[in-house]
Amino acid sequence: MPPSDPSFESPPSSELTRSGSLPTWEMSDVELAVLIESLTSVVKRHGASSSLPKLMKSASFPYRDSNDALALISDDITQNLRMLKQPADQCFRCYQCGMEMDVNRARAHVGKHILFFIRGIDEALNGIPVGLPLPCRFCGRLGIQTCAEVYLTKQKAPQARSNCRHQHKFNYAPSLVSNVSTPCTNVPIECLIPGCRAEVGSNITVVWKYNMPEHIRLCHPGYSSDGIEDGAPVPAAMARAMLITHEEEEMIGIPSDKIPPKDHC
Image (cartoon, rainbow, N blue to C red; front, side, top):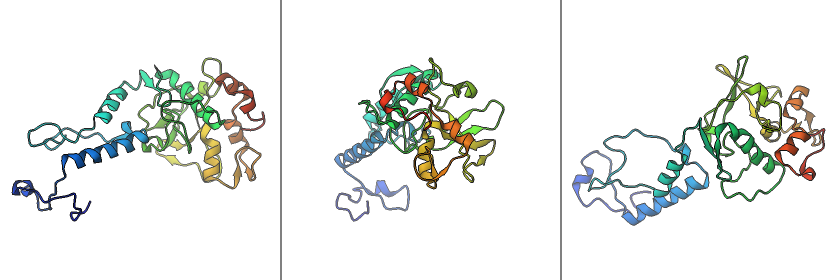
């Protein structure tokens, strides 16, 4: 806010302006509390607690008041971060339903929430709902900068790469096949539409399989994502890679009336 705002006042003491040449202004405790509450609600609404930057402790941070007590602390965010502070390679707490599980079960679990949303099934979940565009396969969230870019390593046994805090290694080749124990095949696949694929160091850009139809609609509007919509067909290899079989949808729990025809994605 500009210094002319009536809610700001000049510091009552010259002690507050000795550390620098810039003007210093003060706010009341009530105003600061309202500001913190407002910022906290934004962070919680976007499910972005885990994306908050981490700063090293120093003489000037965390902030303290004149009595050397911690100041400008959000109790809600602090509690949320404590709940999220878990070894990423051991346990996962689903953002959508709150269930805790071994991280190796997370792919199938989150994939179910994503596919239910794509098929228009309301799960009435208490957590952060899945939405569009392009939810993260590792955590099911969207709009999180660290989850936005997905890569596949260029090696014989490729691995998915993301900055999502819940990224974990999984065997790529077996994950391409749906089975009873892990029906979800929401793995990263290449977009073979000319001009889309890019190489970044030893990685290639990819898209999560369940997100590929939305990726085509957003980034390649001249192509048809399912063979029904108007547009050019996608390369045959890409169409095969993005196909979700009837068997996979049935094992995940999609009602038969919500499953697309067999020759469509």
